[in-house]
Amino acid sequence: MRKAITFISLVCFISINLKANDNTDLLTLLTEIKDGRILIQKTSTAFMITSRQLISESGKPEQEVSGIKNQEADREINYNTRLLADNFYRKVSATLAETSQRISDFEKKYNSLSQAEQKNAVKLYEEMSRDRELIDRARTYTTHFYQKLPPLQAIQSGKTLKTKNIAFDGTAAVRFGSSAYESAGRISETTRNISLTGNVVFNPLSKLSVQLNHNKDVIRTPYASSDVGATYYHETSGGTRISTSVNFKDYDDVLIDRNSFRNVGAGMSVEHPLKENIRIMGDVQAQSKKYYDTEDGNDLQGVQFNTLLDYTGKNTLVNAGIRGRLQSSEKAFLDYSRIIPNIRITYKTAQNNWSVYGEAEQMAYGTAGQANNFNRVRVDLETSNHGKRTQITAINKSFPNNERYNNLKIRILAQKIQRSEGRNGRSTGYLEYTFHTSDSSVSGNYADIRFDRNFNRKTTYFDIGAFGRYWDDSGPAHRLSVYSRLGLRYSGFQIGPIIGADMIIDPDNPDLEQSGNSFRAGLDGRGNFLIRKASIYSSVRYQQTITYTGLNTEGEAGSRLPASLEISGGARIPVARMFEIQIDLRYYSLDFDYPRTDDPMPVQTQSGLRYLAGLSYRF
Image (cartoon, rainbow, N blue to C red; front, side, top):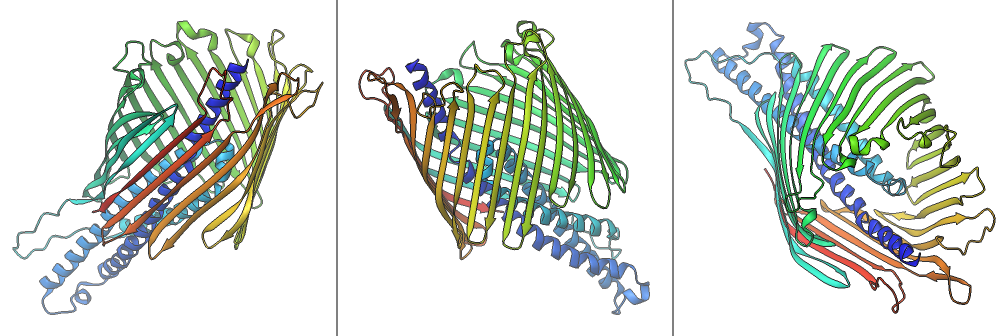
């Protein structure tokens, strides 16, 4: 039992370590999104000014357009202005695509976090959302004015017109440093990161985006990773958008051969407007993953698809589609087909938005894993208005080959979002009851209760999250987890305590000092600010935990006192018009407080250090 507890504790602390720097990654993406938003706003403003001039001139009679004697010279000026507008539009389109990818990366990273980690990063998500709104507004105005531009007229002066140049833009970065990981033994490597992202813009409606990235680093084990991807975008004159993509990834784990793999993918997506308010979309992505250093790897081949029909009416919105994945592998848990049809209907009134969402899922494994097959049906009823949302959800999950696990979940969720000058806040709570619908069920029924509350003001911030699970049966122990973070803010800095607890409560013996319970407290400080256009960020967190591990030889509750320290920081410093110095530092130390004698796992501490410095060039 002690070995199991020790192992579980180690896994938990390693998981914390792997996610320790997610906020830093989000902050880096947010900085890039802000840079893109600023460039989009500036370029779109220049485009709209140029477009207004062209639209105004095209609406005048010929004699008014000719304000000077030489009409050919006047036409040449108009032609060059039209080319200038095209160049501005291409620049806006390229930056929009690049920034949209950053937003997508941000959302994927944010959604991969746990609920507690999302609470810590909610301020960054809100800032990203505000930037996205400004970007979408610029996109709308730019598209509106581009559609109104007069056609490009060639100059009839006998001159040989120059072919429009292909435009290039992107960012290249090279960073070098060192990284080390220590756990019973020290592993260190010279670290490098080389990346190139860019666009080749053939015309305002066609472009090629390319991404190349190479890393050599240490995270528990040394590895080298290389990624290459390319996507071609094209929009027809009728508004149909088409994109095709290919990607390749090679991952080489230096110490553990079975982790090394190659992944090859390709895909295509299409978006077509049937009418002004009806769009159809579809995409398909193929993947082949091969663990090339071992014959017993988790090889797989898969195809993922998604279709969507989008209707926008005056008071009614409808989204319907089918998504899924077909995958084959020699591993039972990787050999499956998954199909998910879904539909959402929203009706808007002056007071509320009412919506119903329905989703079905069929998960079918291969012959070796058929006991895990399941069918799932979900129905949501939701009403929302002015930052308030109430949702009732029913989810029925049935296992046709293993009825013992059939269950039904009923959830009631309420959420309130507050936004005002100098204050943002969110409160979310839900009650979910799960009961097993089969008489042969192997599990009892239980209720989950969760509450999250956070607010950010000019001088203070506060986050709290609480989760509890109550079992109907007297056998299983109830569960309660609490996490809170609060503190002061000043000029880009914030600092304050963090407090949390994870408790297993035995209904027959509700003693807090029992195996599995832990209580923690610590200090969290962060900074994010600009100094003469330099973006600087930092984060420091120290946490002390008491974890009960069972009874000692005297019959009293034994305990450990693991501690963790996490430090991250970095800067983005412009040194010239197109150049930027990039610096990143990350350090963590985990002290597991294991007994130093007679222990099957002698690792007492675990630490990691990584620093990188280099230069990026925006072209």
